[in-house]
Image 1 (cartoon, rainbow, N blue to C red):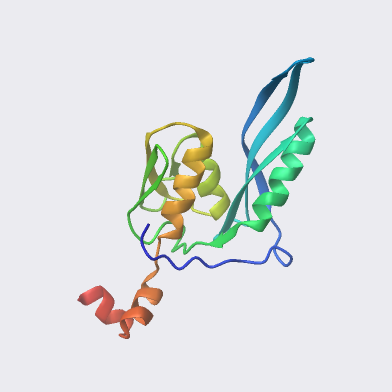
Image 2 (tube, rainbow, N blue to C red):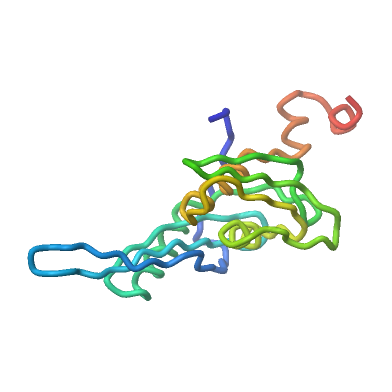
Length: 172
């Protein structure tokens, strides 16, 4: 994994919207029979560049979702969003899932499916082209999308890292 500056955010001062990505019933087989419980993946975001994901497991659906929301608020990251889209193309990978994110022109909308759509909408991206390759497992796709988003860098950050002004970054 490349050297990435992940900016952690505290959840106490921000209002979040949560989206349920996936919920699964899991079974544990014991000598006494089957025990059912639920596993939920939840994405939270403020639609202004802050997003996090969490996994909750419990005997009931509502408890699993609540645990997932609490876990997601502990794993928040700041993502650069420029004029409703992403700063540049990016590939993210986690386990068997590979995602490709590409900035789009205004009015395009969020062209992404399932788990990727939930993450991108929670970040606040309005226009993006996205493709999910490889595994379609929601856990892996969410983590690969977050991985791609955390690698994003805006022009101001690049200018600071290079020690030059913005015009030099764009004009070479």
